[in-house]
Image (cartoon, rainbow over all chains, first blue to last red):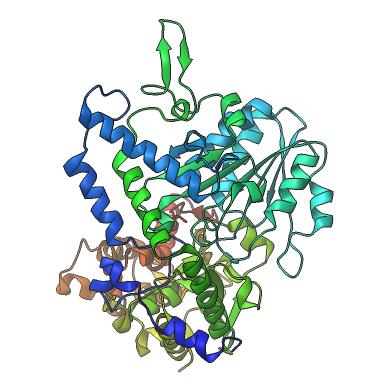
Length: 422
Length: 166
């Protein structure tokens, strides 16, 4: 075990669990599936209720106080999100107009594929993704490639689960118009070197899109440091409500992109034959938005900051390392991904030798341990890695987990092994 | 909220079907053969039956791989359908489907399923219903197609989703 005694002691303490009503109320639940969705703190649930009790009106078109408050709830959330991901100008002012609300990261990526993709891609062009992408960062590109005649190209991994500079230079060439890569794999838990990939994309004149669904919740993300043009992520994986997603984009690029969905709220004016789009970000937000959800997400970011995001990030690094090392120490378990626990951002994929992952998950459920089992919406990756039956178990942690949760998982896995091997 | 049904499901009798199946082998002189797949699980099953001169199922067998529930279910089903007519077997397949979906709970009715009735708690594990059903759906499709023509060998695919999206 590479964690020292004081590190182990720190993850055995848990000052966070009581902030999460479901976890506080159900100590029998051992929740190790935060990569699928996180639990939500009371601060978020309270904010959701507060919106409907105190500021409920349709935002944007209101000329009365209540509607103005609802509008401010959304716009305040935009600024907060912008600040959270480093989308600020040279004076440090948050660029809320660069934050587009969607339903989730999947919708954000669909938006990019169908607007930017359909504008810039032509026959013979290339879209470059990595083999470790979630289906949400594959299928939208498959679709737009089929529509435009562009080709989808995959960055492969070396034996150490890294995208090498050689691979980047080989795959991201002059035909590349869009490069779209996840910052953190939802299966392997590894972090890609986005600044290096962005640099190569821009060198070749391509736009750089980042899937931040697994990174923004766990790492301090700064869009200027990433060097990307667009970033997609979901509120529900970081304590916010389900049904709120974000697309951040550089203002100049968002301005050039055509709208995605059309209708109410996204226009300046409409005639019988034509319409003039509203400015960004409203151009991309047709219809009434989930204002309460945006407001609650704002409160969720506030909660993370109140606890000190750097402290949460540091705790999650220790939990991820302890999780990886605890699994690797079991001689009947194979970890799929790096052995170095400190390379895992939250998620660790593994298999119990000879046991189907669905059986592992069901038996663990018998003792309240919640993990994910299956293809994790990353079937091309599991095929590429040639994982037995195309599926794995996956345990994933967030700061509200503790050492005892991981020890319960290990005990549960021993039970699984006993059930199958007497 | 922990699922109390799990411990009783993976019992010794169930695990014996997984570790020491009685019917998991290729049937060389099969009258009917059919493949079943659960793409989201990776479960793949080939089911065989040999029909006797009187039309009843003389022998049943299967091959393939998948989770313990799909395998144990296939083994229990093979034992059950021997000496049944295709129509009786189809009726049992439909009954099993109703059981694992929680639509049929009457113990006397379920007793027709013999040992397979021990899988009734699957009805409380919705994500595993398709695992349990794979063999039964494969057999049912094969027998229904087989009543129209002598032999079929058409793989079918169930395009069910895998549950959580992440």
